Length: 394
Image (cartoon, rainbow, N blue to C red):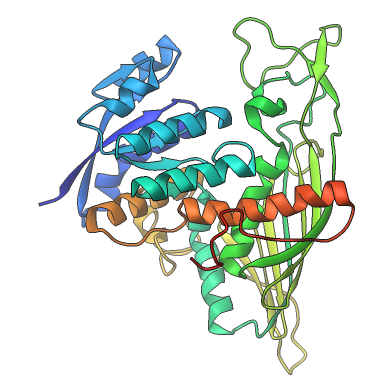
């Protein structure tokens, strides 16, 4: 008999909707699961979203106060999908209530908040997960298997980037993402976290870094009334200061001896959601880009005259892909990755199995972020140290 797992979702924005849809889809996608997810309660400050949660998503109820949702006796696990600066109090309450908790990245907006969340959960003994969604792309998993098998030989260099246009409009409103005490840091929290998590998943630990930052659009129109999160102001609107970084770049060294480069931006025009990596080894290379999620480029070094990258198309021969689409080159989408990670987390809860990435892996990411932040001030290379004080690997 499957274990019933009662779910609370805190915030019905984009990711709250994605995780809620995952709960609805999991029974039909994974018939051999060990659990049955139940959408018990959704918490959101907007009445329209609360009504939507019950009417169309099938939550048993919806509340305005997230504390009420966490305290509910019929809730076993809490999904934290609210703005960054609400992550920590929500996680603290979930831990105090003994509930398992899955949080969207970056877990707060500053490294010390991620560390605090990890230490709370560890002390409370609750299970955790973090939403580094792109680790669950079937071709990313295949890339990891290729690297681990030695197909690429010794890894010599890694190039990671996440270049998005979501902040490229100079008239884009000064919403919480651009304010330090609401979002924390800018692109290093928001999207560099994805690039670093991919690098650690594929290559391993980063030991030292040096880098720079820039705020490309220093002022933005102030929001008024019920302005949408990605709303647009007018040229004559009053403006406010952007308090965190639009751009960051980083050089690094990996523990295995490889070098690395990273670049992230929310204001460059052109790449719309270019979360990408390139891995270079002594026997071959790999390249992947979220904008073409169902394609992996593979270069294999040979002794003959053939050259160039080969395109590996996604298909049901790769992990999880066949759950959504059979055959070869039939694509899957972003919310399928969310369904994979939610299924994997809940299956781990139901079977008492291991799950990664957890809050521990989130700390591994912000360890790198903090070293980069230190480098901004010192203008030199900085060592990556574990902000928890634990020995590496614990």
